[in-house]
Each structure stands twice: as structure tokens, then as C-alpha cells.
Length: 141
Image (tube, rainbow, N blue to C red; front, side, top):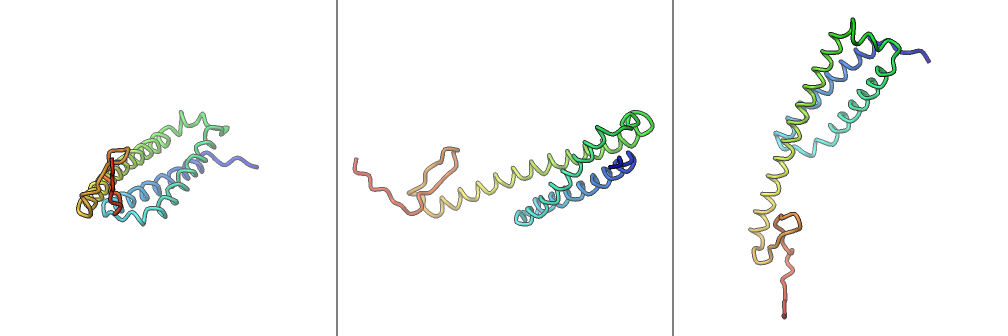
């Protein structure tokens, strides 16, 4: 099998990083709008993009012309590295937004439990409020 040209691999990496950036922006918008049910299909696209990036990266590591990445292709390599860092930063922001959404959902669940049945409220092993779901206790001792 013939080796792909190093320029072709770098162009593919650029296209994948552009696509990944778009996906991350879409993910951010969905998280911001709290449309979590739309995330699984987006996550599939994101995973495929990341796998393709990793495959190309492995191809670059074993490429016969990889020394050019430190010479005449250094500008392109640095541009791609900057795009990758921007994607990583956006992914970190999305991760923090997910954590905030989870915390808000836990607070909402806690408030709903309190409203539903305060007499049977308890805490789970993580410190989250939990109701005994209508099972009232009959304690004899």
C-alpha cells in the first residue's frame, strides 16, 4: 500500500479540526439551551472525528517524511497545534457547563423531593437528598 503524502494528511487534519470545532460549538449551544437529548448524535460525530484525528496523527508519527514537520512544514504544524488547543479549550468549557447543568439538575431534584414528601426524606451515600418513595416507616424500636 502506498504511503499517503504528508501534505494530504495535514490537510485532512485541518479539515477534521475545523469539523471538531463546529461540533464543539454545537455542543456548547445545546448545553446552554439545556437540550441534552440532542447530545448523543452529536457525541457520535465527535467520537468519529477524534478517532480520525488520532489515526492521522499515528500516520504522521510513522511517516517517512515526518522530519519535514520540524522544517518546511513547521508553520502548518504550528497552525494545526493551535487549532487543536482551541478545540481542547472549548471541550474544557463544555465539560464545565455539563457539571453546572448536573448541579442544577441535582438542586431541582432535591427541591422536588422536598415538595413531594418531606417526612420521608433522607440522604444517599453521596449526600444527595432522596425520598423513600411513599414507603412510610413503621419503627417499633
